[in-house]
Length: 254
Image (tube, rainbow, N blue to C red; front, side, top):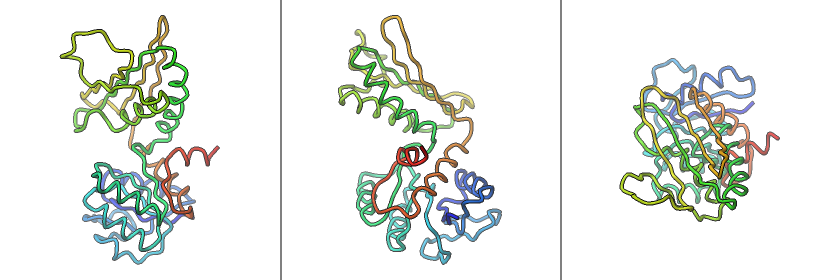
């Protein structure tokens, strides 16, 4: 049984993960951390991590960058692994994450979906074949009209995987409206669509002479990220200090 502290338990992802774990016989949320508690979660909720008295094996964090520093200190003090899903961390906080990973295991990913992280591995292989052959690369991501950032962090993670496999030769192009010129061979176009209630969709296009290869991922609900986070928590519990990724989770399952 993996005992979990859920940081950000009253948020949308916190509630999704709470439902997933409630149906999982191999995991249990023993406590939550949040500034709000509506009493519906079925476990104690604390506003300060240092108030948590329950024994746990791992922390899942889907909260706010405002609380990351204190949460990392608490985790290091208690020697608790952290699945760090909170986004928007500053450069200073990212350095703190790296420093803290010398004391405890930390898994951080731009996207917790097992599907996206499997695709990232596929893209590295595809890029090693198609990029040297002169294929153009484009990424088109689509989300609902309430999403604030563009392009998505996932789109950038996909682009980074391709660029890494291609030796870092590509320049990311986000807007061609002011460019009256032929597409450069080393452009990697990233386009964002925001409309209606479109579910998170990412298309990667490798376009060569007379053939096109497309890889698509669609996220129909937040549960895919919750399932990934729970899988990551089970994987991380009991690991040695260090930085881990969802790729490690996938490899361990093979």
